[in-house]
Length: 560
Image (cartoon, rainbow, N blue to C red; front, side):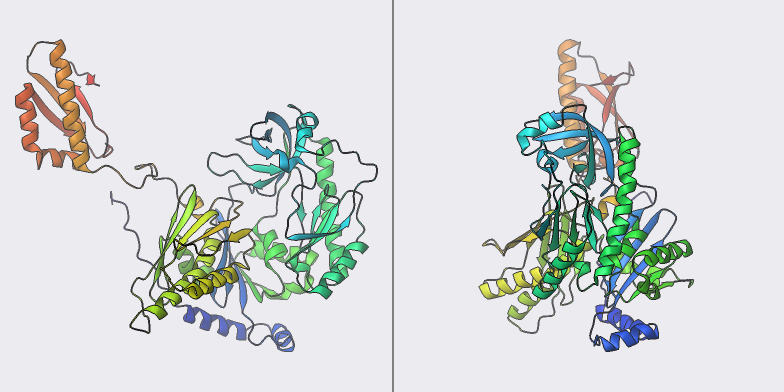
């Protein structure tokens, strides 16, 4: 039991079996849902489910499509939800070299606020088309460029910020002064003064209809809104209701801004139950199962406010078997914490997450290619890898720079097919990302935005033994170090004292002692003869493999 558990072998998951189970569950939907599906001609539509599991310290939401896990969110109930939170803070420091301010928001670390994120409307996203201006009349905002910021926000001034990226490692949270409040169909931006539509809504007639709706929305001066992709094909009354709820929310925040002292917490994003009602429970979701009655009741209550017709999709799961096991989710989640993931054709991907980037290697493994020359398999394995990599990035919440080393393909057309498959697989990923074609070195580079730490960082701590290096020195290396240090210490001692026999005791790890008393025993005897010393040892499992110390047996003092 003193040894670390063996790394489990990669899990082989039969996706056809998962799909079969999903098809059976689709047949058992409420009669109303089946009738609606029939009239919408959704015979071949993917069956999408949300499974919500709540335990004492953790809440998990799994998004599965045809039985296959496509999204996974974890909420630790004893931790604060930081991304999206709004604080009233105080400027602690201005760093002209970094072009950034550091803001005291009452957290462990000061928040990082880049000058660009302090400019009004600086967070305008290229994926949003601006269709209406709603600037405050007579507004003469003194912040027009980065040069104005030190004057507008001197050290000690109060400022309202929203966290856009949670604290990761030693870095404090990243923030912006361009606040946004997401609703189900709209995003309210209290200070933006611009209204837009997501460019993901591509149909021209629908965009024109939504532009008309934006023109009719009754907005306060200086406010802006963005129509989310979830608003596609929704009637105007849905947007009116959403705006009403968002304005109520903003009024509560504004009241706190006026009355609360600095630093203070003003607003927190909803928990996973609220997010499920707002973001995940879209029209194309067929079924939601919740295994805790209190969460089920709260979800129904929230849905009643924003989308009453969706209530029929939600059901309370009260079977004895754990809900994630019942729907074959647990094994799929387990796979997301493994280094190796198997592909259907027999290939595999190996994933390594480092501080700077994520490296992914695609290997042939024990492939089942059809042709003897293997050409069929290489393209097939790489396409499977592209699909699986995009899925694993979502499930693991990987971000930053991702490098994928595909199996080498000489054919440019094959490379293009893999690139297109990767783009198609990443199209549904809500995180901002950029994908470059396969380079001359055979690698693909992807950047993916991440707001929180990866899922694995919340599950695993840095190894206290190797301190995250993943390796420790061998017994041979430590034995050499001990012999070298012995020679150095004894030479120094003999230069300062008479040549009397010296008695030394070495405290060390049992694994190193076995080496010194085995293969290196003759070398130790030689040192004892040459330097006229007597060496004894004391080993303990409590000693780190790489640590040792020398003690003079006569004086009892440690020798350094």
